[in-house]
Structure formats: structure tokens, C-alpha cells
Image 1 (cartoon, rainbow, N blue to C red):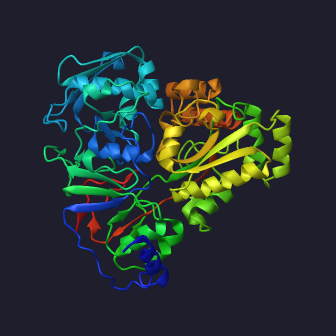
Image 2: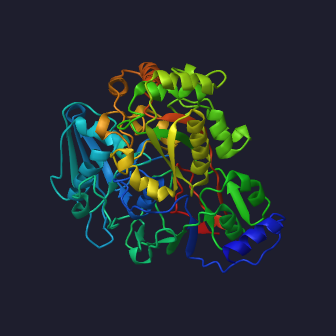
Image 3: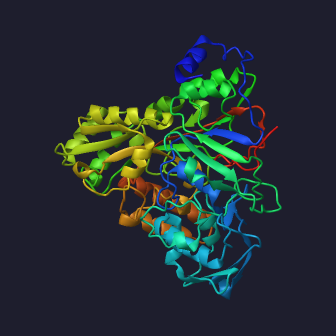
Length: 526
């Protein structure tokens, strides 16, 4: 059915009644997946966009991966040894690792991949600062020699946005230049000839891949490719995706909109399930390099009118079991979550108080270029709330509505807004990123080395370093409060609440792995 007929079909209620609709042919070895966004970049080092990270997990492999206990597990590694009182780590690669071009994976590939990744990743930067060198004494071993102890090096490489291993020839590319060759050693190959940005991305099973002989758990363990081919179908219109899923034309929808969940649940052939384990956090990311957000007083002046509840209601509806506010800079329900510094978010919201604070900050009508991604429903909803807030505050807003792929490209620009730069945008970060300062790339605030928006806060950076050096959990908890208080003073971003996004998939799709991302290995058609 074309888009118009799908919309009519959905509106007519046939699918809602769970009637047996004609089901498209279901090739047993083909998985049709609808991702949350269009794939515009193939380089998970150059961008932190989730869609590119998820692409990376298919085509690349990782040295270590995070397990169900949130601890790093060997993936490409056979194992490791610590020596010299924690100042020397030697990792040995497991047998049988080959890139998609049939070249063997060598330790030199890992070293080059680490060095490139560590230039862009916040946790990687901290690790690199503790290292004297990373070298490959032979083709199987990688040695990390430290100037001071850094026991979290494996955690750094294994986190949800991990260190992917590329061939040395690609990893030699400057970290601020996009790699366009997706040659990896993962369970699937990227079929570049069939890539149509805005429409389709295709992956084929890597027959040479040798999974670990362990059960899959989170992002660790055996990555078994049961499908010969995976097609990502880029379908921005939610009604069209819902109708296609019910008709059996697609198999799995990563981010069904909350207003369609009840409809999908009434279809006997569709399963709606909360598989993702950490939730997502909506944030407004300001550009700290350009007016008006380069002024800390202006950034704080927004807080009296900021409503996390309004944002979450727009994103996930009125059912509060799907979202949580108030929240600070650490994931609710985790050890570092606290109320430190959150007084400006308490009590009734006041646009008048915020306007007075904005005037006192010295704002004189500087143009605010706000990037609004319209093709991801949660970002679209949160962006509408943010844009409305900026207008009610009397700001000179240039509201740029575009697709997420364009935002991903433009947010890397540091130029002034009138020269192609930007002032603010809304995005989601994973709840897994907010578990601790080490994984929190959007919290890191060290100027030009920070995540897009480039905040600079010595107080936050010192707190993070002290957290690494803390002697026990009690000290780390206390430092977490200090870091959050500093964050509410300096505002690297505005936390807008956390929500839980279920998946929707055909009932014959089985084996989904509970994780922080959609895991497309180990899945099969039952």
C-alpha cells in the first residue's frame, strides 16, 4: 500500500480491531527494521548520533563490551593482564578476527582505532590523559602503559558508545574528518551500493565472522547473525510505519510514537515491549561558544520558566509511568541521582521572573538559531516546547525546522549563527550515559574538546577528576552532588526529563536482547 492508503487503513480501524489483514511475504532470512532516524554519517567516531552508533555495532566489533552487570566483557579480546601495580595493561586478541575485506585484524588496527576514538570521546580523553603510550608489540597484543593508575580503561572502551575497531588505514583518518568507508569486522557488512540516504540502508551477514561461544548478554557475548540480510527502512511518518508493521511489510519499529502504542497493542500479530533498559533523557543543548548562550547568566536566566513536566508530557503523553521528573544530570534511580542544585526547577514556573533575569543578564536581542529536528517524534515534540518557551521569553529566535541528519551535520560547526552555525538544539541522550561522570559525554565541560556545544567549566572538570580519584562509594556519591550543583550553575545543557521508549515488532520476531540499543544479532524469525 502507498502512504495514503496506509493512512486510510489505519484510520478506518481495521488494524485496531486486530483483524487478519493480508500479510506480505516474509522472507525467513530478511529482517526489515525501521530505525529512529535517517542514516547520514557512517562514522561513529565523528558523530555521536545514535543511528550511526547503532550502524557501528552491526559493521564494527569492539575490544570489550558491556554486560548485564554493567561490567566490561572481552569481545575481540581473548583476555588481558594487569602488571606493574596497575600501570601496564596487556590485551590479547582472540583468534579468527578478520575485516570484511578479508584482511586479518592486527593489534596495530586496535592502537590506531583507540587513538582516533580517544581524541573525540569524553571518557577516552580522560583515559588518554593517564597514558604514556599505547603500542602493539606484535600482531596479537596491545599494551597500554600508564603514567598513573586508571583502572576504568576497559569501562571506557566498553560503554554503550564504545571504541569500535577499524582497519588502521581508516583509523589513521583525522578524528574530525568523517570516514566514509564502513569496512569493519562485525557480524554484518554494510552494502554501500544499496545505501539510499533518506530511504534505505542494507546490511548482509558476514559469513566469516566468528561469534564468541557465549550467550548474548546486553552488548557482550556471542553475536550470532541469523538473518542473511537486514534492511533499514527510513520511514519518517509514524502512521505509515504503524500500518506497514500491522500489514507485515516491516518487522520491527524502533521508536513507535506513544500515541499509537495502544493501537498497536490491539493487533494480535504485533508485540509492544520495553526491551531497552536505561531509558532516554531529553535535553536542550546550548552553544557555549556563541551569544547569547556563551553568557552563564543568560543560561541560568532560562531556568525559572523551564518546565520538565511540559516537555515529558509532550514527548510521552500524560501517563506518568512512562516518564520521570524532576531530574538533574544523573539518571533517576541510580546511585548518583540527587536533588543537588535543583532549587531553580522547584515551585511554580514563571515566565516573568525569567524575563527579568534575561534582561539583567545583559541580553540585547542577539539572534538565537534554534535547530528543530522534525523527523524524530520525540525530538519534534520536545523541540516545539523549547521553541515556544524561547518565544514566550521574548528571545529573537530563528526557528530552523529540518531533519535530524541535517542537525547532526550542522551541530559540528562552531561558526557564528549568521555564518551557518547554531545556538541550541534538542536531542536525547541514553540513560546509560548518565550513570556516572565517566560515561557522561554531554556533562563533560572542557572547552573545544567537549561534546557539540563546547561548554567550559573548570568546576565540573575538577569534580569529575576527583570522582575518579575518590577512595570509596560514599566519597563518589558526595562528589556526584558537587558535580551536579556545578552543572546547574554552569549549565552544559538543560535536562528535560527521562522517558522509556518501547519497541514494536511482529510476534514472529524472537530473541531480542535486553540492552541499551536495538540489538540486531541473535534475533530470528520464530
